[in-house]
Image 1 (cartoon, helix red, strand yellow):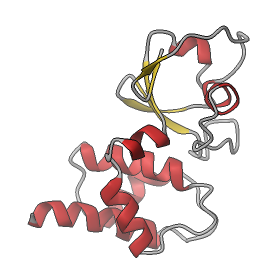
Image 2 (cartoon, helix red, strand yellow; image 1 turned 135 degrees about the vertical axis):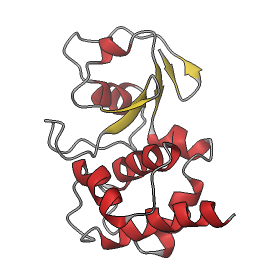
Image 3 (cartoon, one colour; image 1 turned 90 degrees about the vertical axis):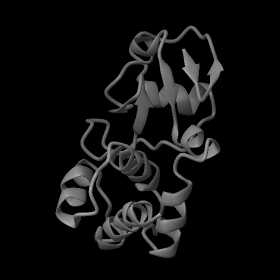
Length: 151
């Protein structure tokens, strides 16, 4: 597989999920393990151009795939505007949900999502945050979209 632009090859246990592989074998600890049932969104990653739940995908299923973690999204600058907006809006507190929230948000923004707060809430509804109450997160995503519309 290719992870954040780097080709890697490893032998892994058949039942190791992708997020555990990335964290334990590659030291890419930005994606978090929350519920381990694909419900909380803390392990959201990009695989083959689509956002997936890393706890629901086995590492062996990523064979031959392009995997982009939160570290890769940050290093390439794809989430720079969102990171700035999250900081400005204080849309992060403990930070546990933030990587998955940013991964989902960039997918929404890049797909041409609107700044409509109801649409944003629906899109990120698969990501749980226990600290911020979502309003600041929704506002930060809307700020990025509105900033692009006026640019």
